Length: 198
View 1 (tube, helix red, strand yellow):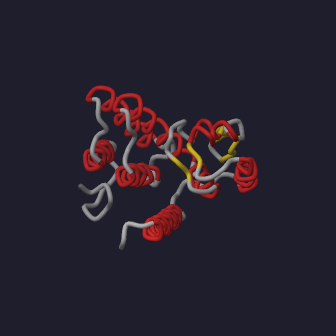
View 2 (cartoon, helix red, strand yellow; view 1 turned 90 degrees about the horizontal axis):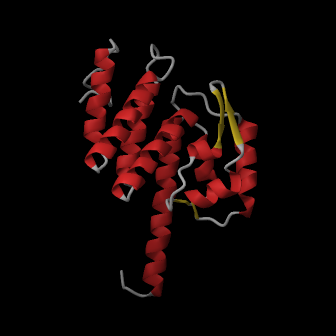
């Protein structure tokens, strides 16, 4: 592809299309989660509150605009500020914010991880690393016997502590291995065919 305005625009358009496809795949993957999504009207209110924000928008801009909005779940209420990290990471559209906050247990954990990464390494998890972290946390949340999502809390704490100690985020495989050890140590079965089966 030539390096001219048309070529750059085509590359940008292709990148946007691939990002939308990734988000759609993530949403389809999340639809099988055990954590019930947040209240639909609360999610709609969050999206409406974002009408004044110019997208793509940073996490900081999203929190400034709708940080005080509340998302209700069966587990309790969360403010958007509890779920979205105040970083320069961008959301392409309001639906991406909605997707992030509709599963608050995972979103709150990822906020802690991203902010720890920013504080101690100057950067948060990369796209693929972030996806792998989320997939590990979702696998832990899906454990039926662990109603309190103890595994999610334990592994989030482990990632944050390790980031503080080492000055770098742990690799996604190390996180999966730690999660598998937690499961096996607490009597939860992990098959080698499972995501956590490392």
